[in-house]
Length: 484
Image (cartoon, helix red, strand yellow):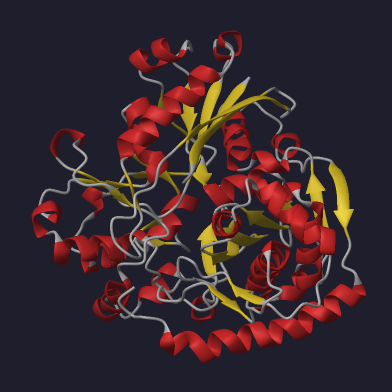
């Protein structure tokens, strides 16, 4: 059996799989997020470790005792700053934190070849500009930094004692030469750091160490190997078999992602598309990212007093109309692809006396779908995407699937275990790290349970609505407060 651990934003999820990559048990432990100032987003790394232990100990003791290897996945980009003795110096600054917009500009000024080296524009969510912000605003903290780790890699340190990261997660730091799959001395120097501040790099299917004896004992496990794992999206791709050229998935989690796998490094930084290493050796991927996806439903639930996401979607589905005029810009935390605008904010446009919960719910579902369509449009070759697998919590809604399929004008495939997410891929990478598994079998896509085909009438309605959606952002972009 194999254990996958995903250090998410809203919680830590763990899954157990068997030799056939079937998910046989899973558990979740929630995590809090702190927003001490507008556009800030932080977590206490101690909470990751506490939640990890709580989630693991929810699993059957008998199954824990049979685990052969562990894999890790996690939210990307988070800056975990460690000082002497691995002391955590400040709360981790998360992927959806927008405070470092000015430092992104400064980083590209300091190293004009940034986009050539990393294959990506610098976004406020990335790790390197966060360190520039700390250096400028908390110099006493920066002076004490000895290691910078990503969220899952801090948990790895506590599990194994190893300073390690994988290529896919490291791709989102702005410190990696993504084409060479190695730390870039030039990018580190531009942030006042050296390779000594960085963890050792591994492929996602490599073993990075073994469980420390005290951790293994506490978890009722043997001192098994821990795989490199992957950033949440790359790990999610491994889980659903999106590993070969043209394979694609859409993730409907807190954030939203369109992920296109490939065998070559294909940067297109000026479009806002990420070009990252995959969690498997010799593979890369393109990725578009929207900062608020399923989390927009949480916001709409609070706004309307709806008790849960299912009820909110049901309210929209009861009317089932895609031709209403209400528009929603889902930029509650700013936006990455294609706007790279940390100042953008959510907008409900076109409210009238008849606007109630169903109308708001419909607009939110459509707004997220139209933002995904914006992402698809800026991929280097959208025509390569013929079908999209859906993963994440939003994968459970067939009605939202109808809207998303129409917005993308692509069939959506719903696969077994797709809603398990990155922890599933982490477990597969754990299985591969032992070196004795049939990789083709482990990486095979799970069976398709259903396919949502785009309805031509829906496609036409949302194509027209997307023009107004894009025009609304263009009209408002200079009006969003730059200090927010």
